[in-house]
Image 1 (cartoon, rainbow, N blue to C red):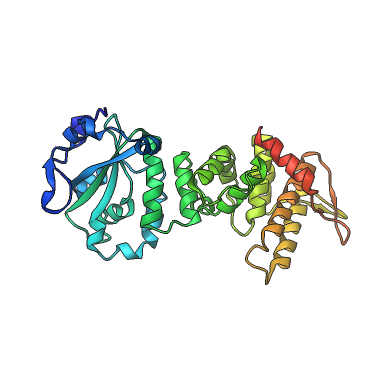
Image 2: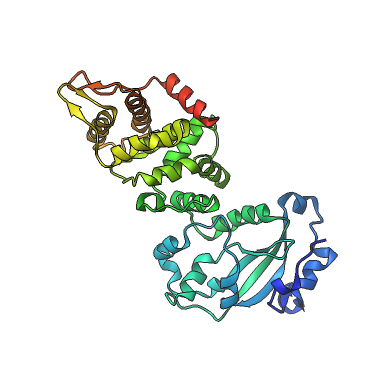
Length: 342
């Protein structure tokens, strides 16, 4: 039997049923009632149960905790033009209630954000569909179902939600905008052999971001820009940071500011990588924004090679026959899979 604390649920009434047969009762009483337990096998597996509907003020709805998997609400609000003009359907939202009484939004984050800031017209109250959830993990899983129904969530949205879930707060615009998503997912797949996973699946995205959470924090310190850090270079930075930790930071900071040295017929690893990225961009013209997955994989290998060369104080030759060559695929995968357990 679920034990829902009365003070947590200030809304007084719940509508349970349809049309004239609707029953008005106290929400806490309903949640405490034995009938609200997860009784069927299907409910036990899912971890949640729909228990009814309450009417709640906008102020109270705003106070309900955001779902841990929610995307960057402020960023999404700037894009959500369809929410700027009120539609009666916007009045219907959903909420999870946990056994300890905590309340968590399942949708409606962006709407109430706009309403509370006066950036969109909204109603005085909302109708909240209430779901009794076994635990916080069930509430997060249920959010994913609502999110796929209510909005077309972009890859950047999912990455932003994953970063928020793992407590990542970035300073640089590139990472705040989630412009590392494809890199972290691809690198995670390479490193963990999860080739057959759905890269758009919420769990995969959260696992990938969580796996590289520490390295993403280090990457943020380099103040990366999209022009200098295409997907392949982001992967290289994360892979080397995974293997070498903070010792990799000086190389990537130097690369980010266009450092590197070239003296006579030799250059260091940073300069060799800068040259390699310039050549890759030139080759990519007319083939898409980043030259495709093959080119980004090549940049991943070159990023690793130049980093390790710099670390070992090994220079590169300048000229037609100089520069960094591609990394053997088997050696690359061995390097990445070593980092997976580091």
